[in-house]
Image (tube, rainbow, N blue to C red; front, side, top):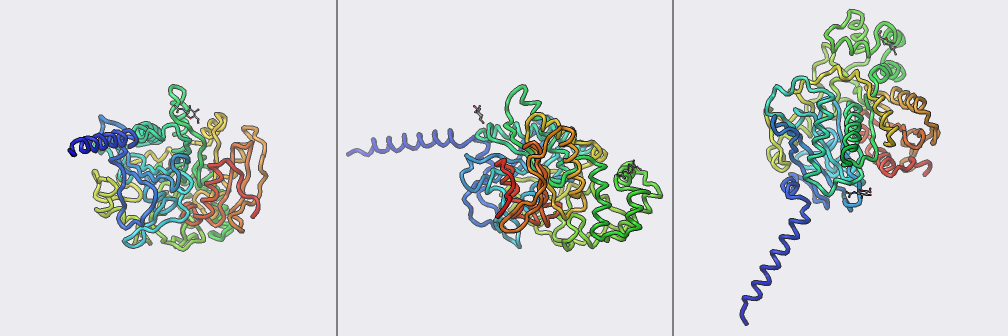
Length: 464
Ligand SMILES: *[C@@H]1O[C@H](CO)[C@@H](O)[C@H](O)[C@H]1NC(C)=O
Ligand SMILES: *[C@@H]1O[C@H](CO)[C@@H](O)[C@H](O)[C@H]1NC(C)=O
């Protein structure tokens, strides 16, 4: 028997397989972004991708992303974008590798995070704006004057172009989540998405979740004094000064205008001395120096004179992401910087944008039918729960939303995970008990319960 027909059949078989592969290999582009394996990574059953998405061809600006598909059945699970704050801190280093991603660095290796959010969703981490982490602009003059507007537009263009790489996610239920200064990024991005959808329905936006977010500068910042005072970080006399002579929003306003008044300077130095740099402001019960990765909000805590010493020396995530083999596996490049940094040193962000209220944008989103969750790690003094709760409460009143779940505890296992209140089945507030500014870092289990309830639009567990 001649073997020719068999060879032909085999050849045709290969061709068919190839064709099939090309058709189903999502898109060719995402194929190149696939991560074979991260150095030191335990074996896992889900796919990971990372790489660049160009947001401006002419100016050669590109944003870096890391995408961890859901652990099981990714096709049936939503797409969730996660953004860290700063402005200028990395969603890869903080979000993915310290908070809710699938792995955390440990020595030379990576260990699994049992409470990774990719148990419930396909998690997309974006280093934004340009100049953060591995994201770059070829023309470094672009780093001057980056602001909320530019960030929101770039984030929108990123997603549009990311969908070209991952067309199978185009019409997927989409949630945008994040924390801290992402209280600016997220509502601003969501607003652009809704505008874009009027021309072409691209974004299947199903909700946003904001963790310890900056939503209204004065309310958020001035709740710090009471938090310090009630947790014993400042004296009665200092509390009085910090709420009358110079409050925190006034100090920050003056600070970013380079015009700190003698009064504010005096009050702030007393506050700084009493609170002590040996207490972590992002979690007043936590010992200092878990990792410098967690001090993501430079803008929210401008450094007072004499506070420049970094009490943190070692940093696992910084070490890991600066390894050449890791960068190769991630398809990452260092452009115009010598090191990957948690928070950008080259970005010159428009810091006065912190004063733009985004709670008004949140109101618009709710009116457009987008569910909103504001949650708060209750040990954080940087953006304390009391400010967030007051803002949500005020918003519910303004929108005439009735309480649908009255203020009550919620459970994770047999313990209270925090408190919650829901308004009009669309606006939710929740605290996470014992959690820091980076809630999924310090309370991963409780954070995952909250995340799942948010995705499912279910009330938080009322009993155990
Ligand atoms: C997108 O998903 C919705 C359901 O969520 C469906 O009705 C619609 O047909 C889908 N559109 C496309 C283009 O696949
Ligand atoms: C903070 O200080 C500013 C300027 O003195 C003042 O307008 C504002 O009402 C104060 N806010 C609070 C909550 O004390």
